[in-house]
Image (cartoon, rainbow, N blue to C red; front, side):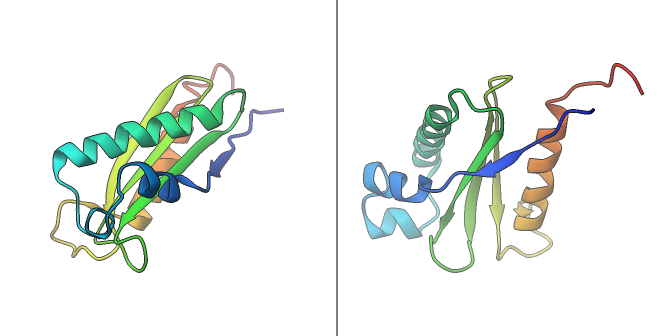
Length: 125
């Protein structure tokens, strides 16, 4: 029997970020400056790691600016506790085709590719 890949969305990251870093309505709704984006990413990965201890599945979460409605900008994070590997990808639900940012659909595909890559090369067919 082959190994199974399990990917789970962990609820609660947006609330955690809004309570700790994104404390004003401006910080919650306006695309962050690079320094703030880095702080948010570090906090998100710590949050994911804390919840993934002892789990066998790949965890993921995301935050959108603005948090309600289509995201002009968002970040998707994933963590695999088996390999201690992380994944981070900016995305947008409103960007046009000419902008250099992933759509939400493309972000989901990249998340699945990240998950598949965690298994390495097959040892037998």
